[in-house]
Amino acid sequence: MTVYHFSNYKFEKFDLSKFGENCFTRKDRTILDTPRIYFYKDPSKRELFIGSKYCYVCEVDESKVYKEKELFKRYEVLHDAIEAILNEGYEGIEYGNVVVLFRVENVKILEVR
Image (cartoon, rainbow, N blue to C red; front, top):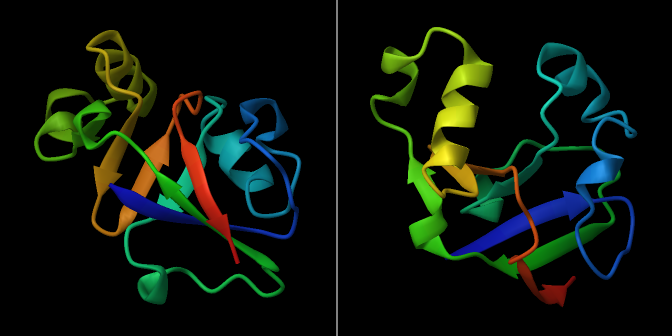
């Protein structure tokens, strides 16, 4: 599956240890401390972040991305839902136009625009 990530920083690989350091994810970290990186399936339908200099075009294994359907109905606590999908071998979750990855070792950066 081709996905897109937007950033003000240029890098060679994704690093989850940086989660919460920039203004876009700082608030996200206060809500849920689990490190993650956000991608979009359709870049034209992304949230508009002022100043995003780079668009990373990436390839992720679609079979490792959980398609959110009933997950949040089964778990009342977001952390429990994420832990459950990771325990099932998934690396992230897809909902709508967004793909959130909690493991990024297998993400292939195809192009930086």
